[in-house]
Length: 89
View 1 (cartoon, helix red, strand yellow):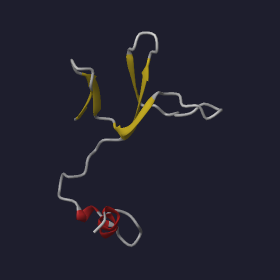
View 2 (cartoon, rainbow, N blue to C red):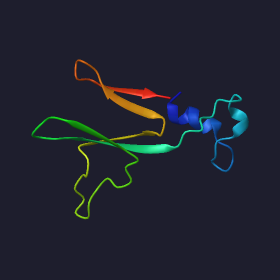
View 3 (tube, helix red, strand yellow):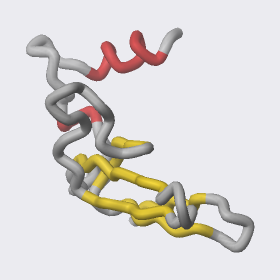
């Protein structure tokens, strides 16, 4: 069974998720958020911007090098090997 079909089994007749289909306390209270990342070409410094609300300029050029759609409880750091680490909660 595909994920799309599994999700359809949770939807009520209005196409909404039914709260009775979730275990008590299972629904997150986080809000959606877009996180933008930019790398300075001269220094290699990575800059993280939380709460990005515009992805493109008027000419449809990307405003960030990378954008991650996530939640407002996500934080990011870089480890000693230069890997981007995401933490939730």
